Length: 533
Image (cartoon, rainbow, N blue to C red):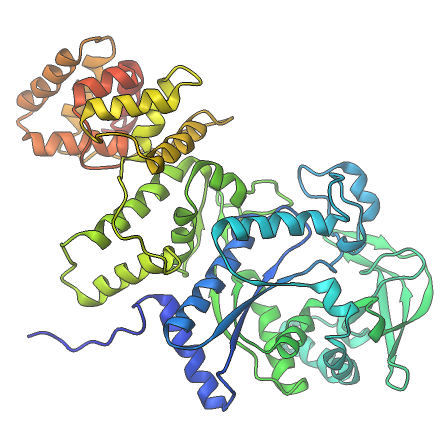
């Protein structure tokens, strides 16, 4: 008996989040004429997969809201009035002289934009543009300078005593019971975090501060000792993170914002400030975990283990990066350029399924797979699928091609294998990506794939027998000899080989492929996969 089911939107987590956002807005009685979503963009270091991923996810929710029939807008808010906390890896050492200065007031270390923040902001927006994301850019510096946040700043400063007490109750942080959650730029030394605000005068909208110093990381940064007054309307100071999100949400009427797990406490406090101090119900949230490198460390500007979106798109399609973000939102994941073949082939599999006549027997899963593909394509679905040659095959062939002839060499081999009739423009682009990936500096190749235990002895024997062969027929014969001696069927053996070499159950005729790829290299890869067998 078929069970009744209801697919929300296109059946993905994006649709579920959009639906919950809309239902909450209806309960609150707010207008749904325009449902704004926000993504915060860090401006203190090179954009990376994690920081751009926040924008990709938020844009997906925007698309899901539009699927549900509601106009939506993504606000990409750049935190370019934040102070520089440390010199990021790869940046010049002289930046240490600008620690705690607002990044929008620091010279561009690469001397091609008006400021440090302008340089990083350009890279951020370039990444978003290359990914095809449509957004409204909002500079934090401009938001403060224009007075857009003044009403919210005023309310927060007037209620600072209650805010400080509540923050201490929530997260055991007492500093805001001693100083206001607002830091002016010192008019003497130009730093922002070193100032401590002692009082607010609502008559003049001024904050009295002293540049007393602050803790940054494990060190204490001494202030210059200057005391002064700062008018909140002049844009020469900013709210601290514990309250700034709330001010932004209220000022820009934000209804949804995702956030990383590390910001859980800050978001909880900001939700309270928005509701109780500003009288603005906070946006609906979705929480995600941070990306990690292969060692389990989080992707970080300061650690220097970044994977940047610009690097990714040197080797892979924007769709593969979008799919990485949309496939799921829960759980921590490692991300590395070494694994790009897996991500590229993951997208190929999704596209193959979308255009296949074969449907998943579970209607909810089928809807999710179709919706996932449509969102990954930003709802711009092609008429038909593209040619899907395994990325690992392209990279292996490109690696052995004479340098400078990769496109021609790989295309000819694919035609010879019978995989394509000719290389169209899309395939030529993929060959170029794979060639760059195979020959990048420090290339380690994708993570090893384990072989099915039933096939492992035959694979091991085959691998040892081909290392010195030079004839494709001899390679093919070696395969069938190993199959026969170990009592296997070809259907058990060849998929195991291709899974290791190409990440697919199928591939070109094995003999010519092994000779083209290099028998010794193929032997090494196969033995690595069955080393524990």
